[in-house]
Length: 292
Image (cartoon, rainbow, N blue to C red):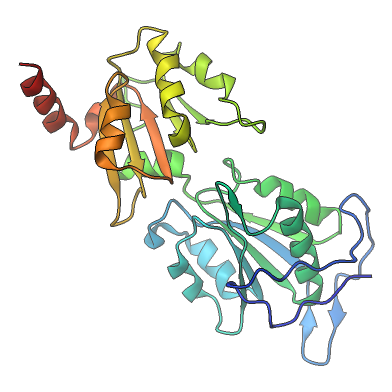
């Protein structure tokens, strides 16, 4: 039997996971329409992409979903200004996961979605960027489907293209880059993704997410392929007023990141398209001055 969730669950609290539910693999025939004394409840999950950070980069369809939400489960990289689009009585729960600090495990989030859909109705799962680009949105959709909960997906602007684009860096440009890679730096076991070694052999633009802690290993992979002078940008808090950028070459970027005090969350962009960034020329002049 499903447990109950009360209005005592607030975003600041660590509470909210309801115990005693069926396992995620069990296909349950729930009544999709249940009635309470207060209102009719229609269980539904909408997975929404919040975009790369700037709240003005949210889509109209996402705003509409937020305005109809009974519950919002939101991530660490979601701009909290977006929560203003929800009704005042909407239950808002922070379920963010950052390195070495998880408010909830993914399994707990999956179960929370199901519990809240049946006790409250329309659940919006609000995720940074696009929910299907390293956002685990598909896992949550699959889990809700197993309980016969109606699902919907609202794409968002992925940070992998939105952050470079907002900084003036195109991920493709005719005659310079005909394709691009989007890679997460770390595999599930904590090791550097093997795809980075393959990407280092290509002439494509390479965009690496969640890779700041492995920047030294990433640069070594590119140096091993003779790419020491390839331009690279590391962009923290892209699209926001607090954006911080380090630009250099594969040879110099580790030191540049330290000098600029770049912290996570940050996007790494590698390739000649980095030269389109508005700071690239001034940086190149500084490097030439120092070398002379």
